[in-house]
Amino acid sequence: MIERTFVIIKPDAVAAGHVGNILNRYEEAGFRPEAMDMRTIDGDFADRHYAEHLERDYYPPLREFMTEGPLVAVILSGENALVGVRELNGATDPSKADPDTIRADFGTSVRTNCVHASDSAESAASEIGLWFPEFS
Image 1 (cartoon, rainbow, N blue to C red):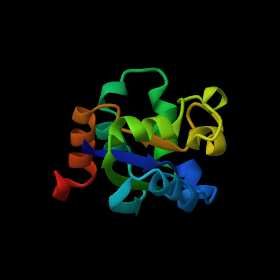
Image 2 (spheres, rainbow, N blue to C red):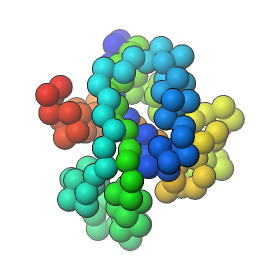
Image 3 (spheres, rainbow, N blue to C red):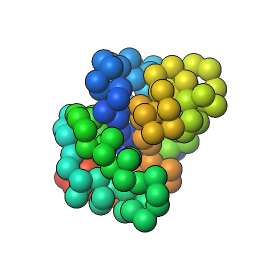
């Protein structure tokens, strides 16, 4: 089934020059970018994106990291995109990610793990609506 999902190429990957490599991995796996935008977000926008994490003790450093520099927001579509993109990204902790996944190759820590992807159809719809309202 053709699905849409939402991805963030995080500030660490942008700063390290990995945007092209990461996008290439998605395209080689059959996922097509439908929209893409490089931007720097502020704290209020980060709070809206991570609303379910606001009270967690790990959130303040995550918020600081996500607002420290440019990131790339992407809508990807393709066959089983929700699961396929998350599998391609690998485990949240790059040290535990399978070899040849994006996080294993480009992530450096649990926080600086280079990419985010929607974890369900509901979160994809919500995230796409927040980041790309014209596509919701």
